[in-house]
Each structure stands twice: as structure tokens, then as C-alpha cells.
Length: 388
Image (tube, rainbow, N blue to C red; front, side, top):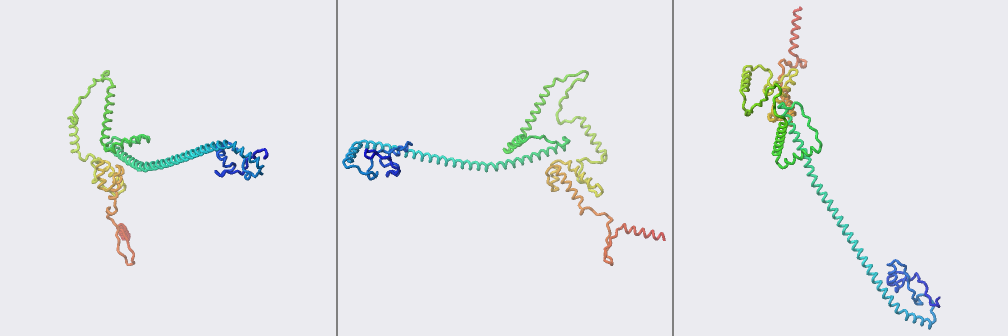
């Protein structure tokens, strides 16, 4: 095939000295990179190479030179056109690669910037939530303390009101109180907290009281309107509405009754042996040492302190240096204090028949003889003398 001018297949030892890649020469560099960019197999050009480079024997001089000259002359224009196309394709490929690299760098920079912004935003949000939690924690603690104070004040007011009704005799049994849910209690406490924090608690209570009174009055009037006119029934006497009288004016019958009671009280001062609670005082309460004396003393003290008002009881606690707390606890503390003072062993006098203690005898023994024993001894001696 060498004589017929055929070309051998491309060798794997080919290497381009421009790009450093193997499998092609420098003249096929543009086509090689174009085929590689398009993903197609690269087919090198079939141009003859030099004898020394290909390792083939040299042909005859005249024939070889003529063939070479003719091939060079025929393919000169083709080689120049191929070179221009290769350069154009190479420039386009390089421009495309540069553009892709620039887009990739911009995209990576954008992703990095977005990631940095997201991290900074998350850090700022965490800091904001932490500051908000730190700011709300003291407020929650303050609300809890305020709620506890309000509950204790409400319990105290309820206890004082209950004691006031018990003192007046309007409430016979201890009220159990209505059970309410947590939401209802929260709503009620919010309604009480709002005006007290604004400093208008008294006005709020007065307005609520007036509103309730007006509502009760309207309900009473509506109930009256529902009823029909008062008409006589059967043989019953005619219905007469008593005329209205000015308030604060006593009738003659009431005055006569009062005078009669006054005269009876003056004429019979010793009619009642047991004084009432109002007439009791600490001067009438005596401490006795007999059986049941202490219980009687404590009962009389309880009757006395139970008859006092709240202000009088507080004054008694202040004089006795006792903490008030509530009414029952204050009365109990006052009774204990009075009993301790009244039954102090250092204050109670000893009985008249105290044992007599003699001095030391000759033998150094202390002799204790009571007066009763001496009396018994004297009686025994007298009986012995009479028997003799």
C-alpha cells in the first residue's frame, strides 16, 4: 500500500505540543477539541507525515518529489481553508468555555452570598427570640406574684366579710363558696387587676355596686308589673296600702315600749345573773385554780373577744402584742396569751398550809414534817394517855 500512496492508521503515540493532549497533532488540535466538546469521536486527518517521523523508507527521488509537489500544490488552498475554520471553531469554543466558567463562578458566588445571608438571618432571629424570652420571663414572674397577692387579698376580704356577717347574725353556717373553672377565675382576676393597676379600684367597685343595685331595682319593678291589680277576694277585707312615713321618726308606741324597758331595767338590776357579751369585760373574768377553772376562764375569754368588732379586736391584739392574721386565729392567740399570764406559776399564790422544813438535825438529815402529821401525832398521844 506504500507504493500506491495510502496512509497508515493514526498511532496512539501522537501528541499535540500546543495543548499537551495525546491522540492528535497540533494541526488537528481545533478539530480534536471541537469533537470532544460535542461528544463525538475524533477522526484525525489523513495527511502524509515526514519520513523520519513515520519511520517509512524514502521513495524514489523524482517520483516522490513530483508527487509531493503536486499534493502540496493541490491541497494548499484546502489546508488554508481548514486552518481558518479550525481557528474560528477554537475561538468559539474558548469563548464558550470562558462564558460557562464565568456563569459558574457567578452562580457559586450567589449561592455563597445567599447562604451567608440565611445564616446571618437565623442568628439574628435566635438573638431576637432570646431577648424576647428574657424580657418576658420577669413579666411572667411579676404576673405570677401579682396573681398570688390578689388571691390572698381576695381571700382575706372574703374572710372578713364572712366574719362580719357571722357577727351580725345574718349568716348561720359557713358558706362553702361556688366552684369555678380556671378560665372563669382568670377572667375574674383580670377584671380586678385592670382597674387596680390603673389606680381606680374604688371607683370600679362603686360603679359595679351601683350597676347591681340598678339591675335589682329594675328586676323588682318588672316583677311588680307582671302582677295584676290587688283586688278583694271573697269576704276578705279590702286591701289597704299603708301610707308612707318619713324615715327616722319613731311612733308613740315604740317610744312607750322603750320607756317601759328602761324602767324595768332600772327597777330590777339583779334580774339576770349572766351578763351579755357586750357587758362582759376582762375585769369580770376571773381565773380559778379548781377543777375546770381553766376551761371556764378560756370560755369566758372567748365570749368576750367574740363580742368585739374587728377594730376592737385589732386594738386588743396590738396591746397584747399578738399578730392578727384572721379573726379566729387572733381570738385563739389572745386566749392563749391570757391563759399563760393568768396561770403563770410565779403569779399563782401558794396554799396557806405549806410544809414546814426544819434545820439539820444532829445526824445531818433534813426532816420534813407537815402540820397534819403533827396533829395526828398529838391526837395519838392523847388517846394513849386516856387509855392509861
